[in-house]
Structure formats: C-alpha cells, structure tokens
Image (cartoon, rainbow over all chains, first blue to last red):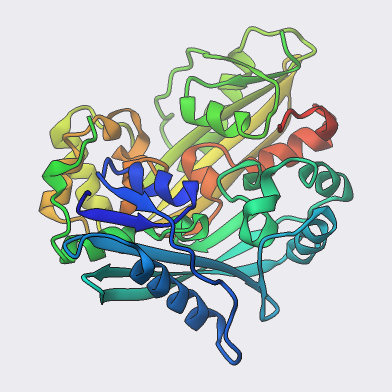
Length: 195
Length: 195
C-alpha cells in the first residue's frame, strides 16, 4: 500500500490528485451521507470528510485524505439529482445566480485526524435557457454530481464566474491539500513523476 | 469542412470546445504575435484574436473562432518562458500575488468580424517555495504557456483563488463563446454529441 491514500470514489478527485504526478492509492469508504439535525453545511462537509478518511482500511503509516463537497443555494444543500425532473429543478435554481460550494477535507494517520479544513468558493451561473436545460439534462453528466452539474465537463459553459478555489468546486482544493501534505512530510516534491 | 472552425494551435482550447461535444475543425494561422507600440494589453489580445480568425483559410460559410490569451502582472505582459531561468523569473513574479488574465476572442464569417470581446479574470497564487519552483520548472509544463504555468495541469496547486471565468484562464471563455455561437445560430444544441 502506498503512503498516501485518497478515500474517495470520485474519479474527479482522483484525476485532480493524479494530475500532480503524486503516487497514491484510492479506496471507497461506505460512509452514510445523511446530515445530522442542526448541523450547518460546513460542519456536515467537515464531519463527512473526517469520517470517510477514518473509515478507510489502511496501514497505520498511511496518510488518508477524505473529502466531501456540497453545493448550497438559499441555505439549502443540493445533493445529487435523482432523476431528470430533479436535475431540471436544481439547475433552474442555479440559473443566473451565485451559489456556494464547500469542500471539507481531512488528513488522517493511524486513526488520528491531523488536518481538517473547509474551503468555500462561489460560482455564478449564466442564465440557462429552456433549450439548454432540456439538452443538458438529456446528457448523462448531471446525474452523479452534487448540484446537478460538472464544472469541468459540459457544464463549464454554464459558469460565468468563480470566486475562490476552482479545484474546490471540482471536489478537492488542490493548493490547500498539497500544502497540508507538504507540511506533514507526506511526500517529497522530488518524488513526483511529472516527466 | 465543418461549419465551426477554431483558429488556434492550442490543444487546451481544442479540448475546451471539444468538451461540449461540438463538431468543429481546427487550424493554425501564422499570425505575428508582437505587440504594436502604444497598444494596451486588452487591445493586443483582441487584435490578435481577430487577426487569427481572419487569417484562417476556410469556406466563407464557416464561423471561425480566433482567441488570444495574455497574462499581466504590474502592467507587464508575460509571454511564454524561453528557458528555465525565464520560467523561474516569471513564476517568482506571480508567487503569492494576484495577476490578470485576458482572453480576446472573435467570431468571423466570410471575412467579417461578427463578434469580438475580451474577458478578464484574476488569479491569486499561493507562495511558491524555492523547492516547488525548482521542481516545477524541471517539468515540461511551463514552457509553452503564457505566464509559465498551466491552470488545468500540475500548476493547479499554485492557484488559491480565481475571480472570474475559469475557462478564460485556460484560454477560451466558454460561457461567452457558446453564447456568441448560439446568438449567431452557428450550431444547434440538439446536434451536440454528449453521450
């Protein structure tokens, strides 16, 4: 097992971390994602990030990264759309307005949470026309993503402005995660494979 | 020849436009990129975008997209680094600070400029350590990019915040380009191939 483990099923998080040439394993931890009553969104993301990292079955020497990303508009957390009508409803809410994206991440080693942080960005959508909505929700893209869109996919053309970390909107705030791993001596830059 | 032509050699611009499932050709037009004396950066990007689109040898029916992206700090336009020392110098300037990224784009048909716009974003870099600088400039990434970094590559971990369009920083402001193409009836959403 490698020294760094990403406890996430998200191919987008794996791609982000992989883009650095970092050598890591990934695994999925079956953590229940339901919010606890009274929990504010940032707490929810942070708790899930910790739980995902703590639930991973890894060597006590491994640095485990857990992360959870949520999309919030009007104080409401948008999950993944269950069907087409749900995706249409979500995207109508986001159309022409700014929403918040919070990612919580945690780095755990030997059952101890070494780092846990939340990073928040805001995203301004263009006005989505009825035709665009009709078309986009017929593609497979919205259905496994919180908020019903992919910032790095076709959904990119909905996005007029981002304020804050872009990689945070994809699901893993790269500058902050790499900083945390560097501070913990979890990897050495000179070992990265970026040929 | 397809109805939409991207007059750009940049694989990143091709990827961005391709991510929509848009059917287009691309071509390279050999336009001289030197600034004209007295030209401000936004004018420069806009002029080059127009010239690239106008120089493309295409059918008069085709919609040709030209684009030019520049990175500016302290009023100075940073080009592509010529060698390692140059890349180090550029990245030192960007470290820990905010710089501007302007993309000019133009849509041309039958020798007539139908649309031309500039979009500006700002990018805040984290403090880049001497070790990170040493390592990054040994990868091939900085050398064919204005400003010496790739926002969508390994360079992503330098970026703490973006304000404005993210795809603009990559080299093509997707929301605005797609809007322009839709307004011109250059394509129909229902023809897009998005799996």
